[in-house]
Length: 251
Ligand SMILES: O=C(CO)COP(=O)(O)O
Image (cartoon, rainbow, N blue to C red):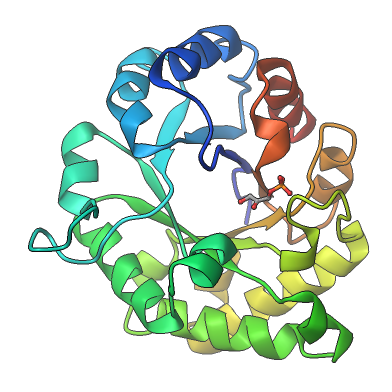
């Protein structure tokens, strides 16, 4: 099974509309590499302009969160219908910052995954352990609970389309990245969990990224591991030259 690698920039709460469109204009061409999918996950305010800016390119646009309901009295929230309406391809769900600061739970992650598919938006589901969980030898247990919860109730057909991002929390924004071998060990385990939930054809189809201090100078090392299908990148996705180097390094 050959899976298309996917590099997704998670801009978090960075960039105004004019900065975002300038960024896309700078990465056109350079970040369009045959055989690598290139995605920018931007703040909501940038999404309409970005969808326009990537027209005619192979670059795709993602959001960083969504609500599971189609509409309703949920002040400050954005629904999958609204993302679909804009032409957004991907949505990050269950990022550790959302779990930590906005009370996201395994249950809400699962509801959002279902809702994303309902509106034709592909979820990038984040899982990963805290430092104290890693030190207590609980990395795989934590990933098991989070992965099984995220996939609950999904058909095999939809499960194949999920992108999982394994992001050890201690590696996010710290410059302390997991070794490629350690990331492969956990990501291979996550793939085995998906095989147990479904079958090997589903597990072989699901793309699993590594995230946490990925930079142009280490991305190729991760990509050399058999189960790692790309990266979800924060800080190093914010500068055009760095983003282009990440995409080119994923080939
Ligand atoms: O949280 C991340 C991507 O979602 C990783 O962030 P950094 O690449 O800045 O460590």
